[in-house]
Image 1 (tube, rainbow, N blue to C red):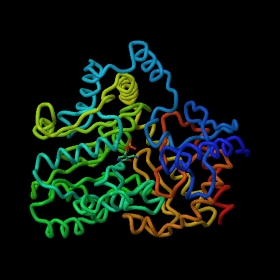
Image 2: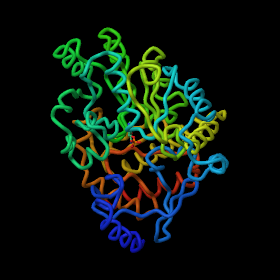
Image 3: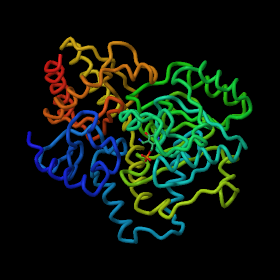
Image 4: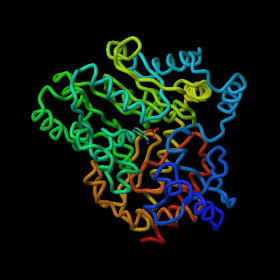
Length: 428
Ligand code: PMP
């Protein structure tokens, strides 16, 4: 498989864009290769600048749950575009999407749109601080909530891949308000709360962790967080930027039956356009400017193209049987990859929640960042390259989640499993 054109474009990009990319993990650093430059995508397939075609399990890192270029999404964007791409004034589309989000996500009574997941979590934390009058927050090691200063502490995703959980440029005075607990460990949370009694504004958590690979919450973990927050007057924030509309129409909170005080969303609700949102209890949300004093704003927030793409996508997700069929495809591909590893005598630890899955290069259980960090990332890199050569486009890091879309066909899944059988044999 030739990658000459991609490599050429990467060399050129590096002269004008830091590292040649606009988001670090795209650079393929941790797998020791040059990134593919993408020309186009359609349904479950993605095509690079050399004309190679891949079955895509990145899906733009989550948003493309109905596949690339779904005709209904394209139509909605085209129609919106013809009426103007941005006004900086309210539109009916914003209320339509807000109402769809409110009726879908159990904890959300009011919602504000922003333009990225980072803005959503950053704003949710400001609001939680403004509402409680407290400064400290608790996050979990290996969870990623975007790149706002206070959240780039022991973060997952690209921050984990690059080994810089504490980025230069984050003032110590800011980072000191961020306390870090261990995922799936209520005791680590209780210890922090005991040491900082009455000072914690919020606990922010990925209810299904997707940025240290895929790590499901253990039974009782989310319930325990809910109880602790209720007892201590702490705002519980579920960061569902990844899991929202992904693991179920109502997100992880629907699956696990736990109602947080606030929820952050992104990815899928923008249908592939830049969107984020944060919402929650009316009483909290009304503290937001202009109804309340906590400031938050955005030139392109709620812009009509993104709203239209989001509305069209959510309408597709509402079709009967959508999540059932996605679950079945996802089960097949994740179990198929796990079986392929076993057949080759290669130890992996396989996880999946709905259409999020991961093959950890570890012989033992992965349930938090410490166990995730123990994975054999060099072996993962070999597997990644072998899969790429077989036409399977996975996220280029052990610490990411694979996403299945409704566009993945039976034949895509069979081809992926066959590719995994070959790849594990090759690296075993
Ligand atoms: N929260 C979670 C759980 C995420 O997965 C991400 C992005 N992968 C973010 C927040 C940040 O979103 P964005 O990249 O749109 O800023």
